[in-house]
Length: 465
Image 1 (cartoon, rainbow, N blue to C red):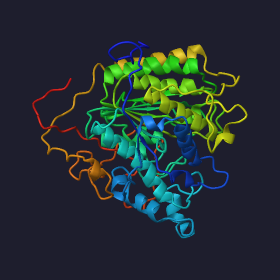
Image 2 (image 1 turned 30 degrees about the vertical axis):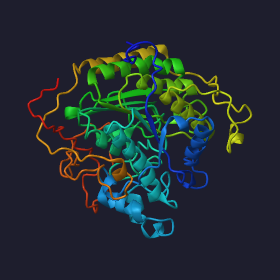
Image 3 (image 1 turned 180 degrees about the vertical axis):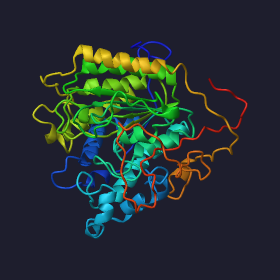
């Protein structure tokens, strides 16, 4: 089972992929504030490593088109997006009620350029999905994205806009099924919640569980209604190492790929699961973390790689640089080249760092029980879900010129089948944390997920197993 990812014709997975990389030079200038652990500067450090290792020449490099308000409103509530658009450090004291309502202030502070920051990182993820949908690349990368905690109507865990949900909605225009995998140390709650009741998106999150933010991600949270068994949660304890992590990751993902058969995969590569992270408590090496990227790549399915958490920023840059090399199929030297941030990486000036000798609280028996339980859940999905077919108008053709225009609307078709259902409340298990919104909000169903409609195609007589 653990070799299930090697789906390429023959031999080791050394086949080159066409990789497209999104980067905005301004992203490193955004600043959450003094003492805040989230530092967008890490994206600029990553880019500098990519440049000096010579990896940029192997990729198409694109500056993301900023996501527009209406793009963000494909998932987020209009009044929440409007608030993000207009709030500033100077005006926030006049909007205390809204700050509380939208959970903006402490973990998610108001800072200069906040909305532009959201537009930039969301634009990269949406743009990556568009490029994948049109076959312009095999792998799209947006290390500024992956902000998985944001909810429909509120910020959470340093995340304001959920670029992942927006990218998945875009992928669903082209693909019947999309897989989301999350290797951040924190549970991918915002993405799970958005797709909790659909069988068109499977979410798989590997995370620390037990007295740890955001508090969700119990192994018993499996999805609801049509989405039952389409949410997988892998709860881990402190000190998990490479061996234990892969003992779970490879067989679970192999089985997921076998039974769910996604048309595209989104992998959130949060680097706070690395050893020595400022906020994390896992013990993964960079190679162990990157093994997840390598394994997902080996299935040869369109792949969107996103960033996420990661608060020891020198290690975040190391990790995402190495994982870009993995995506490209390029070996990256451990000896670091001289560059503008070289002094961050002393005293060794190497790409890789050794894990610590911290205690691993994940016993073999615990891992065995988790693996058995999740594989058993997956066995209840005998084959990929069928998709109801309907007539639809052909999609608008995307051209390179169109996508570079700020007013091009190819990303969000006004006739898309991906509309959010604003009227239907979902019945959800009490274990899954949901937001409580003040009664004055004009959108009383902020805690619900996305209504993912059946995928219409032009030929209604075709049956999909």
